[in-house]
Length: 327
Image (cartoon, rainbow, N blue to C red):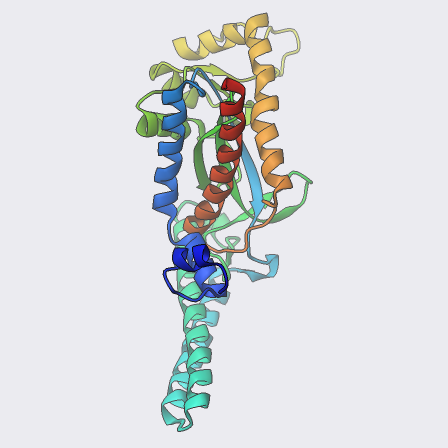
């Protein structure tokens, strides 16, 4: 309202809570493209390399309460109640004569309608999850009526909360974040190939080496990533037989998995793996310290937009330091 520069940026539009909130989450595609262009410019300047990239997952609490998770029969009952409430409020709005009261009733009707839509999405999500379960487990499926897209996950502190799995890939040499994804899976298995492929889509180059922890070390994923030319650096789990050398290939191992086992038995690969914690976990800790502890938006698309703001701010500050060091 006072500074001309900010009035110009706003285009004469008054700023309020909804203006800021809508702007924060409605430009995810632009923010994602901005990440690609920013990192590409740093690659062009020689300040970032994709020689080694570390990936890690970070579970961040969602904007949903544990009590909002319900089974399908309860969701159907909630939907009936929501529809009845919407219809009652619609009639009440039409019958009202005073303009001020009509606005209040219209707001109440809108809130009820949005709840109905959330319950409908929750029922659809419940049916989707049940289709992947056995008959015995179908009855146990619960979905949130607040945010149907997020499940309950086991957190780092050992507790269970509604959360989203934020995947970040970071260039080891510069701590610049080069890849971002948000999933509704509590496990990191299966997340490595999409992130490696994301680098090819963004920068037309696969990472030379991808550093991940044991949660990513799925044999099929190692085979896929290795076929693209990226070297996987991930710990080999301890065998059940204490007498067996974990780094010796097993009879059923593919060529890529056998090479991974042998590689991780070398001092060179073990030294490279140590760089993962100082890169990926450091970046995660920085995001936590800057407030990325719980999302206040709902839906994976909006959650990713918020994550991209954190990523772009991180890269902006890192790029400043990198350019100073280069100068």
